[in-house]
Amino acid sequence: MIPTGFEYERATSVADAVARLRASNGAAKLIAGGHSLVPLMKLRLSEPGRLIDIARIPELCGIRQVGDAIEIGAATVHHDVATSPLIATRCPMLAEAAAEIGDPQVRNRGTLGGSLAHADPSADYPAVILVLNATIHIVGPGGERVVQAATFFKDLLTVDLDPQEVIVSVRFKPVVSAGYAKLHQRASHYAIVGVAGVLDIQGGVVRSACVAVTGASTHAMRLSNVEHALAGQPLNDESIHKAASIAGAGVAVVNADVHASEEYRRAMIPVFTKRALEKARARSSA
Amino acid sequence: MSQVAIIVNGKARKADVEPRMLLVHVLREQFNLTGTHLGCDTSQCGACTVLVDGRSAKSCTIFAVQADGSEVTTIEGLATDGQLHPLQKGFWDAHGLQCGYCTPGMIMSAVTLLRDTPDPTEAQIREGIAGNLCRCTGYQHIVDAIQLAAGRR
Image: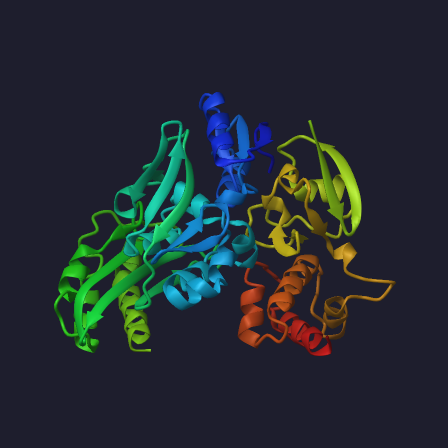
């Protein structure tokens, strides 16, 4: 399959990428790993007149500790997140989620920023970014702005990102007591349902919980009823089971496709919520 | 047209390409390296897997212009001095193929797997080739072949 013709150029810095985006007057799209964009272009579902390659901009790559936070450059590939010793130690849920994205070849090319900007309803990262309360750092013609994960994902393939802006990095406070559990589509390895959960535990009691689902609806979203059900409860099999059993109840639109019916997806949200919370609990006591 | 310079199997190569030309087509049609196969053309089957800068990648999902300045290794670049690569030998000895269509991609994925995990478990091998589909073997002999190759290195 051959995409529509386009012009190709490489940006040398974030400022250069923003300038090139601006100069293209809306004709250009950014490409880094291209593992969301290239398949769409081959199907001619996306037909940009120009591609600006940002994969090799040094300031967009890498995983760093910044104070008590971790910062990941937007062009960092999934493999690097999955195998980072810093992420494995400080935020194992994120390494776990990154290691389950697609397949090895996809993880060698696909990037964090690309996944977030594209916001596929079945992408893994959005659920994890939501429960980490991460901030997304964006540069555009008007300078830098910071968007909370909670307000970034808007709707189907729609995020708070202007066509002239570049995602530069994602920043979050790492947390150990968190887990990601996912029902894989067997060929593409997209999440039919994926749930991320973070537990803040003190003295065996859940002070607060953050839970989010991906794959189920138009975009990743928090499961606030599960969070409320857990808050203030002693952490045990019963409280996890009870909270997980209502997961997805408040989600109005649930996807149905060739891989899973709405009924099946609805049935799987509590199952994978429970698994994510159990992983979080296991890590909290490790 | 754009000119791309890619080091393919250790040799510097140049090609004039339209930006929309996929790496797999440049390898096969301009460099005549037809060992890399185009399978599903939708980023799922892995038949087109090559190494880009040392790591497995699906050449149907990369524009050749993106690989400008990179090093690419195809199945043709594995054997040295007429000696098959341990993985090629492993696939031969353990009957890791039937029709052979998926084989070059399987082997290139396995090269990256064994680089990251020199002594993989069966589960790690199956995860390592999760991006490659085979419709003949049921995968068992492929897993055996990779295990055999890992043990011989």
